[in-house]
Image (tube, rainbow, N blue to C red; front, side, top):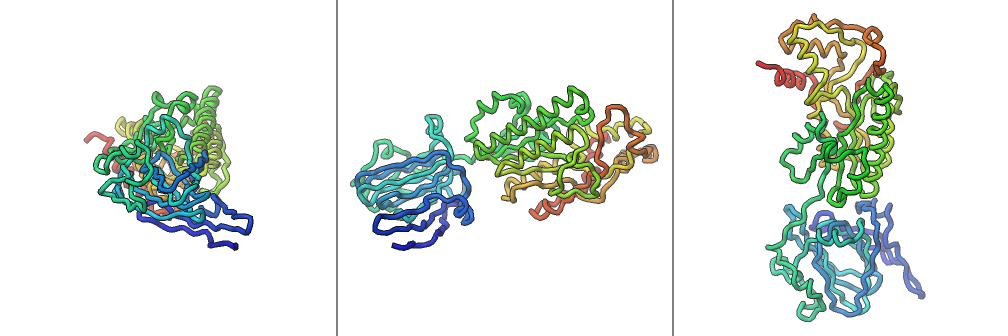
Length: 470
């Protein structure tokens, strides 16, 4: 017997449910097949779902019927022997809830069943065995998260080849609820860490009203402590957004600050990366222009890190850890402005006081408003953008800090001439961390995904007017 057919996939009316045709090779001794081949199946659109457990179910008699069970993990099922009728019903919350797909399967077939899609099988031959891979470990706690549908539900109306009154079913499967009484399985959630900081507050605003997003400040989840990693039910999540960071650039140059920066920006981020790998999560991590020395006039995502100071070194180390996660987004920003203390708010306060500040005029960049970082993160997560590193700043001509300060004064109705431009060398004091000369980020890659950051000048105007009393 030669190869019966090539590896193929078949789409179904249930999103994410994929039927596969597997090549079977055989001779007089029997047959052989590649039951799971990661790279080949990924090339055909089957997700790399990271199986961690392999189970086998043997059914001695024709007519054995199991289901309909929607499990809180993904599942890849194929036959070792016999023939079955498979039925799948979408029990996830959404527009396809209640959609049915069914097909017969032999050892030449397999099916990928995404989390929340109910699956049921009826054996059509004696001595049928099927094997299935899952990407989470079964436990009593996990079983409590199952969603069930009655195999004889009249609304779904599965066309069982062997009538259920002649089939072999467990009492439990006979007692499952009708579709009208099923509580749909909710989508996996997103966990935002560092939710009380400048970016964290912007993320709260961006995802306001979204019931699938959880927010955790430091009091809820300290990323430097081990306990929250052990106690969190990671099965409930599909993504982590890490908005927690040590951002005191000058303080990072002190002995105490150096230790804190490495503990938070590098060590804790590596722990998050390990968690993401272990639980097949998408990890979103926010990086900084400080990973560069600023000698390049414009920084692209592929540029090798060359940090000048401790803060930049710790951020570069965190980036390296996150880059090892298969599903990751590193979002690199510059000159962030949001709620809380920041450069723009400081300049507005000085303008109100009639102060004459000296501001650096030989460092170039663009402001990045936290609300636009948050919007960019949401765009990456919901738009199926390719994983990797993305620069996100606001659009427009690069400016110096002094030019931005003058714009703030002007918007506040103060004299911009009160801002005195000075050089970095003149401004530097003992303990001041080195800064990149150019913090300008190339935005081509994020724009290619369909996200266009708004101009910095319009964001600055709106921000200053909202912060300045009328």
